[in-house]
Each structure stands twice: as C-alpha cells, then as structure tokens.
Amino acid sequence: MIKQAHLRAVLISMIGCSVGVAAAKPDTPSQIAIDEAHATAILAGDQISLHFPLTASAETSGTVTLWLLSPQGEAGPEVVHQISSGTRFVEAALPRPKDKHGNLIEGIEWYRVGYRVEASATHGILALGAIITNLYDLSVAKPSGYLTPGKTLTVRAFASNPVTRRPVRGVRITANLELELPVKDEHQTLTWTGTVDGTGEVSFEFPIPDIVGISATLHLKGQLRGVAGALAERTLDSEIEASSRAYINLEKDKELYQPGQTVHMRGVVRDGRGRAAAKVPITLTINDADGKKVQAEALTTNRFGIVAYNWKTSDQTPTGNYDVIAV
Image (cartoon, rainbow, N blue to C red; front, side, top):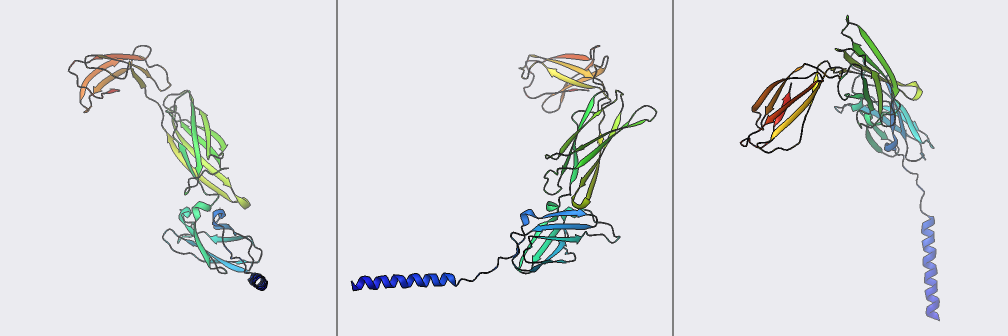
C-alpha cells in the first residue's frame, strides 16, 4: 500500500510540472515577409507601381526598402515604405530609369527589384519583367503560303511576356495590311481589330484583291489598358511575301524504284492567282545523291498547266536518293 501511494504522488507532481512549463511559453509576433509568388508591378508613365502582398497581416510596424537593379547590377535610388500593424500588402512606386537625356531607358524588363524588410531582416530580389502585368511583346506567325491575289490572307498575331513568354490576355491589336498595287502606284489599306484571348493569340483575315503583282506590309499596334488607366502600347511591322510568279506541284507514281524501272513524274504549274499556267517553259533536273546532275530536260506545260516526264533508269543506275528540281 505504501508503494502504490508513493507512485501516485510522483505522477501527479510530474503532470503539474508539465502544465506549468506550457503556460509560461512566450507569445512572439510572426515575422513580416513578402509573398513573392503574388508580387506584381505596373508600368505607369515614368513610374513603376509595385504591389507586394505579405504572407500574413503584419503584427508589428516596420519599414520596407525597395530599389531597382540594372542588368549590370547597379542599384538605383531607394524608396522606404512604412508598414503599420494589420497591413496586408506593400504598395510603392519606383522611378523608371532614364538616360542622360532624360529619356526612358529601353529594356526595363531586364531590370530587377530588390527589397529589404527592416523589422524582420528578410530580403529578396525579383525579376521585374516577370511580374509586370502590362508588359508584352508582339509577334506574328508568317502566313502559310503566299499573298495570293483573289484569296483570303489569314494572319495570326501573338502577345506574350518577353521574359516568361506566358500569354498576355486582353491586348487589343489593330492590324493594318498596306497593299501596294501595280496600277499607277496606288495603295490600299485593309484594317482589322481584335482582342487577344487567354492563349495570347488573335487571328485576322484580309480579302486580297484579284490583281497580280501586289506587295504588302503588315502593321500591328497593340494596346493594353492597366490599373488606374495605365496604357502599354507596342508596334510591329512585317513584310508579307507576294506570289507573283508561277509555282509547280510535282508528283511521282511511287516512292521506291529499282534500277531499270521508269520513274513517272507529273506536275501542275499555277500562276500568281492559283490558276493553271499554260505554255510555261519548265526545266526539269535530276541530281544523284552526290548532287551531280544525271538528267536535264526542257518541257512546256499544256493548256491545263500540266507537264509530265518519264525517266527511264538503267540496270546500272546507282541506288540512293535522287533530287528532282523543276524551275
């Protein structure tokens, strides 16, 4: 009985000691830290507006110091932002860098933003081009085929972040296709406007006049309206190749041949309008695997734009890949 009573007393003493230690644990405020994954910036005139969320509401007051870093690592002037208790984000503006003539420096996307939180001694550096929401480049996919008279030309334009290459939604693009007509130096402009979707792409369709010898230049202008009316504009010019010459689609009767067999070839020649080209002279050349000419023949298309040729190989014709060129 004495041993049981002594053991119970020890257990009670240990439990009481444990509870006492837990109650004495101090309550320290959490550190102020920037949520880098959700940090954003906006180009607004000669300023860069920063919006840096905190990982949690600030439980104490403090300051955040911000500055720009050039691609060469040169630090710009510092801006100090006050943080009050309960603050959930930091909003500040940094001046855009200028050259010695007072002009805004190009290539702002390659700058970085440095920050330092004095209260918690946390710091970091963010790629500016990756967090600016109204920064984008324009690009255009070359149309498949040529600028063909009487046909519709489809052009695909893209807007993407120049650093991350992620698509930028909401860019309004105005496309002007400037046509130079071979008639008394006349010009004609076709205009199409569209807004980039979530894929960063928008397509334009231009009806091309049925006139041979047209040349064209595509002018793109993009506009993206940001927060507080900030406007980002970009332009891009691209030459569109015109189809003013005849072209040929050449086919053969099968893929593989044995020495001694005849290669049957047939082609259709079309003009710049895509119509059959009659009475057009064609030179057909056959080269061996070493690029040596083994056969050349002068041909003329019939009234349907068709040309045909049969190449009779010999039993001694070397095996290998042969190129057939028609010009």
